[in-house]
Image (cartoon, rainbow, N blue to C red; front, side, top):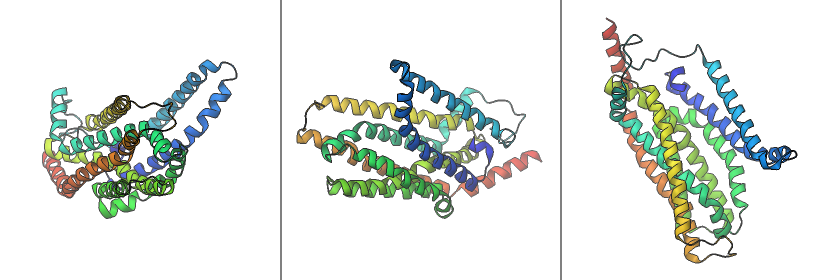
Length: 326
């Protein structure tokens, strides 16, 4: 919806900030209320409690999505996918795919999203093992997740001023650099102290939040690049490809974690684990984050070079459209 509501890049970042803050709050609330709600629904039939709650969540999701779409009706801009305007013939699937392939900015954003979600899925599978066997306290995961919400919201609220100072890709560079450097320090000291780990992770969370939340803004910038390059914004296809990147990253991250756990012969019933297994948990949790966000840092640096040319691209697009009208 965002690219259809405004073409102003600062306004888009503001919309992204509202969504990011709301998402962070809900990500903290939903896990906290889920089990109490399951307990309430278990009074009649415990076997179906989770199914009932999933149905309730689905209905809420559907209702909120409908209200969001309804509330935005009438505010959409005439942001046609082709420079010739509203009456131009609809592009074919082949033309849309060709335009997507030529849009290298959306391709880079797609790649960042894949590796980001791959790590998110991988860490989600490994973090409990790391906290349990490397740090000696499984509850540390809950502490960092809960307190991390505050750091996430704080970083998200800084997106607009940082965008004005650094640009979208520049914010991504800053966020990825904070996360990468922090994780590299934890790798070098081979962190095993819970307090040092918590402090480092909270700093990394702030950086990761910047890189994560600004990525959708970089994707919307790719619409301008695509129109400048091919004459088409290709909005629907570009935005959909972003979602596909999310699914690919999540699928591969979970698969890698399951494969590694099966390969190393992990015994969940053992009170202690061999050193080689503990080291694998460390590298799959800490070192992998340094590597993933290091890759993202390089890709964001590439995007900064193209973002500097956006004013020129937008000016050329406007000139072409004005010429066609005349």
